[in-house]
Length: 451
Image 1 (cartoon, rainbow, N blue to C red):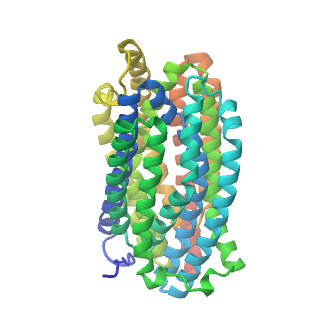
Image 2 (cartoon, rainbow, N blue to C red; image 1 turned 120 degrees about the vertical axis):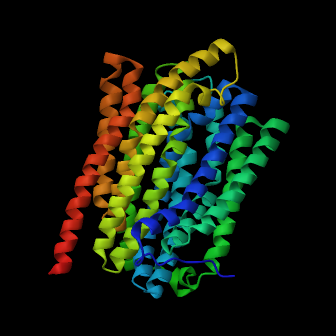
């Protein structure tokens, strides 16, 4: 049976965005589940040191993988716009050229990341307690990069044409695979952080194969032989959309890596508590990120069809819904913060108590500011769907400036609370810029279409 597609250029914008986002929410929930299972299994079986080795890899892992993810998000914009305009030939060509660009990106990223791993970890002042474990974990994760890139690329293809169910199925199977392999490799074979990394990579492989099966069965997403020959005009167009998003992620990652260096300067216990709480950022941002990603597909298809009024309605609905969800999440998470964090940590009671103190403080600040992140997601996705990737790229510089300013200037004044606040101020600054950019973009497009 052929996988389904969805035309989002007619019908209730709110209903379309919410219904399309539900499989994405479930998919991202499952992705967060298997990420959290990694932490729970390694933390409770191998202890605080192994847990910190895995969680401390977060920003460096993201710095490498996010380049490919940013490119694939930009490529998906072109595919959504072509599909919305009913131009299946251009859709297939965009898919083929996206595959070529992603392959080239992988070769470059794999070489650089493996060769520079230890120098970067030392530059980040990674404590000697776990630097070798973190390096081992990241080497295995980077070796599995083709599966991560392929899974994200093909999921983007499918969502661009309104199919969010197949990525959900892929994530269900990947999550089940990861949980089973985590328990097998860590609890039974005692492979430690290596077992967690291998399980994660194999789970991504399952996701990739499921998405590949669906893409092959959708004619408009299945590039022909000619579509896989270099087409430099199409490549330039794809890089015009994907390049700024990837660069935006690079800039954000630089800020995150410098923040990691600041965090590492506070010592092992603080690093363990901070990173345990940071592991929950993914689950906290999951719902808003999924709804906003749905908005990006909605905006892209309707922009391709010339229906800006529908884009406006969709953005208003998305902003209202995501802010309400953010406030609800904060009301639930803050009272339970210590109990939630205690699920990850098992070690000497005195160590655990200190880790939970630091982690609880950071989780309180993060949950309180998640509303700003949801606003950021909404306007960034809307701009990207409208073909503007420049302002989102500039928002990355704002995040960098705010994150670094707080991380470097506030700790001498208010201690570790300056590190906690760095993330929130980065979100606030970027959200303001993106909101202004969206309203200017929509006005300019309205005038252009009316002329």
